[in-house]
Image (cartoon, rainbow, N blue to C red; front, side, top):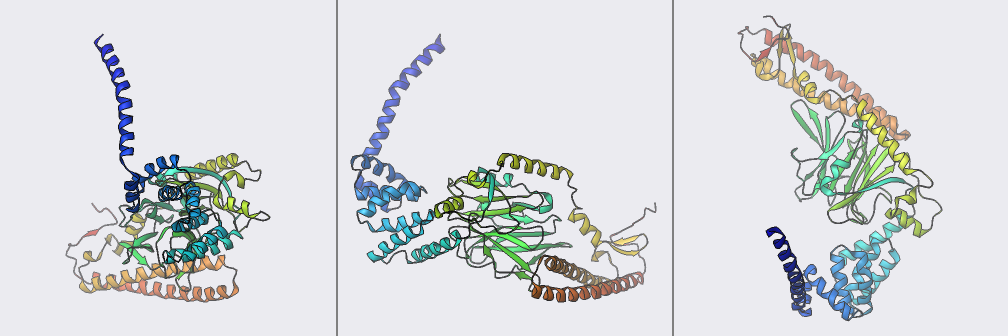
Amino acid sequence: MYFCMLIAVFRTMRKILLPFLCLCALSRLSALTLNQARELFLAGDYETSRPVFENELKKKPNDASLNYWYGVCLYQAGEKERAVPFLQKGDKGRIKEAAYLLADCALLRYETKTCQNYLDRYLLYGTGLHTPEIARMLRQSQKIEQMLQAVEDVVFIDSLIVHKNDLSGHLSLHPVCGTVSYGEGMGWQQRDSLLGFVYGNEKGDRLIASETNALQTLDLVSYHRIPGGWEKENVGPSLNQEGNQCNPYLMSDGVTLYFASDGHQSIGGYDLYVSRYNPVTESYFSPEPLPLPFNSTANDYLCLIDEQIGRGLLVSDRRQAPDSVIVYTFLPNTSRRPVQGKNRETLVRLSEIRSIADTWNGLNADSVKNSLQADYEKAVKSFAAPVSPSRETAWQEAFFIRDGLVYHGENDFTSARAKAQYRQYKSQKDRLQSLSRRLEDSRRVYQATDNPKQKRLLASQIESLEADCWNLQQEIRKNENQIRALELAMPDTGTGSVSSSFDNH
């Protein structure tokens, strides 16, 4: 009975309080005058001033200033498409900045001529503002027009919107293709979860990641595993230019590298680029931007191509909320295949990936998607993982002195001369590993290239590397024998951290 009375009282209070709370909210809104909202707007507080402008527009829908202010609030909130009609009314009222913002909105929709018209109008006002941004937009307009002539004909079979922090759980690769993961706990600085990816190859002996440089931007770096740690390698100046370079992915050929950058004259935010390793110069060729639709005026963060399964993943934030990205699944082409016989409107629609169904051309996308997923799950189950690098490293560090006696480091040696020569031996082993890796890369590129001139250069380099490896192997064998002789010449004191390869007890 008492409980029923409490419920009745609660319902009565709710009927009284709800209108009161609504009245308070309206009073607070009305308490903020238009002049106060305008002051907040000029101070950059678009969120607080926005509802006041929206309310005033109901009374004066054709007021140029109100339309402009409200349009700017939408623009700053990332709702640029919604902002356009309001900014247009501001532009008709000859509000100068409206033309500049409309140029940017037009560029996002690939309306390059409209963008240039708005910029021409803005320049006639002679404000002298936004000079670098205007130059950028003009350059982007020209670049977009060129790229629209070579839109890649790609089949997208799936798309999935995910929270940025959950992205790594949706990047499935066959183990042969390596791994893409966050760099947390590995010594890499990451200021954003989308810019902190680390690529590791199948063997686990090579990593490519981003590190913060002296200018506080991100550069790509490469690491190879050596006994006792990692060796850093310079990827070359062609990749690390102005801006940020991040999210690397190396194809299984060990040569083709994909990455994201907001430099390299991108068409908007982060764009995706591809480069190839040049073993002759031991650096990468100048990168090329991926074509539309892989790139866009939004941020395009990551491109993964799984050759084993036959599918690719594209990560972008086009038309997404600030905390979300969209992961597209596509069927990779074996070579560039531009769209043929389509009008400009269709090319723009395909470039923006407005609908993945536009790319199917009668293909049963669900059937293909399910088949590829089944192939992936089957391949992962049957995959035999390689021997872990830690075990390989432990084996390489073992140094045989004689039957039953194995050393595992320089501190095990009792002879000072043997210890010094052992250090030289370790340097030679590291050098041999580096030469062998270069030789393997050169052979791989030689098989992949069809350029006769490059083949001749590579053939000469391969011969030179083979000779260097053979000579170094002979030196290492000679050094091993000298180290053993020096150590065995010392009296056996029974001390030192040694281990027996046989159990004599």
